[in-house]
Image (cartoon, rainbow, N blue to C red; front, top):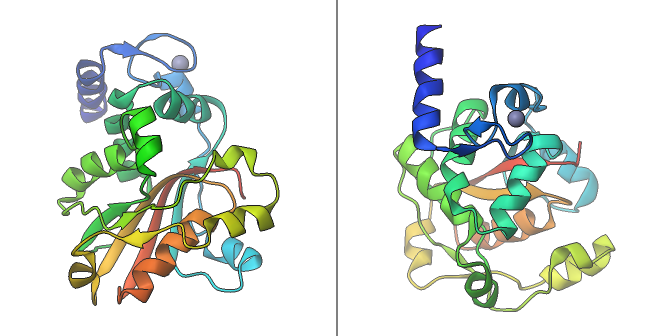
Length: 222
Ligand SMILES: [Zn+2]
């Protein structure tokens, strides 16, 4: 119990802000709102994905919690309201609740350069940078998005979404040599259909990655 209190104190010192859901002063989610998060007991989304795609390229897909309540708010603010400082909290959430297997590298879903300019940061990269420190793993920028995609939220049907994702990812310069034979963690913030994660995993697999393990903060999918 002592360590719990110490951890809370550390959280408050690290984030002298307020709860994203109830505005209480303190960490990005206060104890009450944190306790109302729905963490997945079974984090394995591979079977769910198999129902949707002819081939699932990631070997495991671990999702932390349901996209609802305080977590949905937190992720929305993190993505759209210039709240880069929420990244360490989300990284800690993944580190605490996911059973993350050993791996060689950690990488993340990239943003198209135009979106990156608009937003100022890639939310997945920000989480990955802290999570990499917690896991003591190198964080590599292995993928890029050369083709501009309009906001996914506006693309209604899954078929349309899949078509838009066709060829969405390519390898960054020098990535291929690093990928070959490696077990790689691939971080995404929100899993909707899983098309994005699947496409990114397929590019890494095609480049010779031995194993891809998707790490996702939240999903509504299950
Ligand atoms: Zn709260």
